[in-house]
Image (cartoon, rainbow, N blue to C red; front, side, top):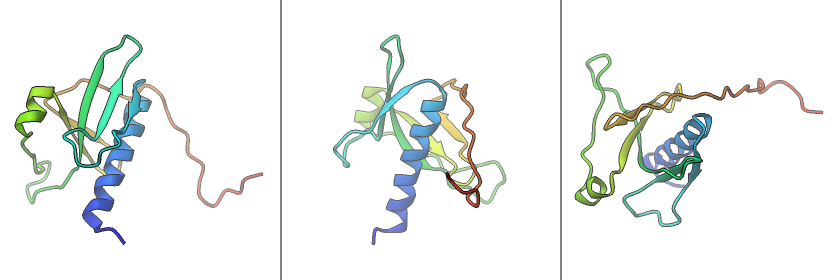
Length: 115
């Protein structure tokens, strides 16, 4: 079984992809698991964005969270850190990236049976 940190990291990547899809972007995950980019997103105009997904971890001060520095290669590539709250799905981008979901996802309760 994988380490809980790896599981949380994978969950943060998946939740970031869902968030970006809801914002109208297309997403792709690189096949290399050790590179500087976790998620690649692009829009219909051909703009490409690189993201590094991080699980948002709260500090003891309310509203404050651990921020991580980008590596030199990430800065050169313009990678955006995406801090994902895996409890409620909120995403904070650093440097700031103005993006809001436009597509609502309706989820079905777990107890509801499928036909």
